[in-house]
Image 1 (cartoon, rainbow, N blue to C red):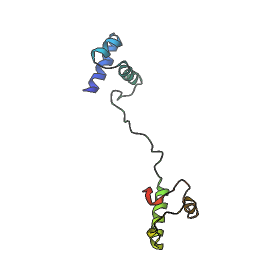
Image 2: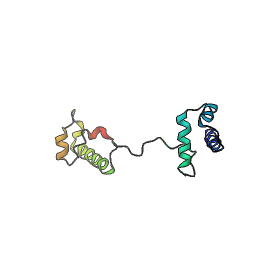
Image 3: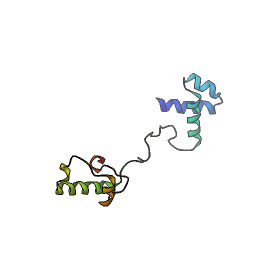
Image 4: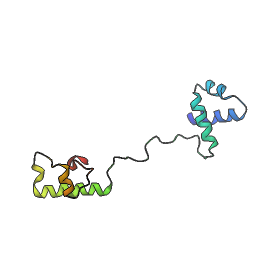
Length: 110
């Protein structure tokens, strides 16, 4: 339905109808109309389809190497019975164990 409205709006524009007449008759905004007109003019074959709004990256997501390091640290803690401690070591101790300084709580990172 929405995709058809987009196609119809662009067709009406190239038939000579004014943009204001088009977007008001379709009960849409000026921004909406020009967004789809610009997408059409980009030349993409699927210009009328909505793009994903999901982010391309997750800047705070841990990498595979960091996750593996955390898991290996947990395994080492379990072997040494450190998991029974009521406190977590400071981030300085993590660096001594080979953890990056950005990790402050491996027990809660995963």
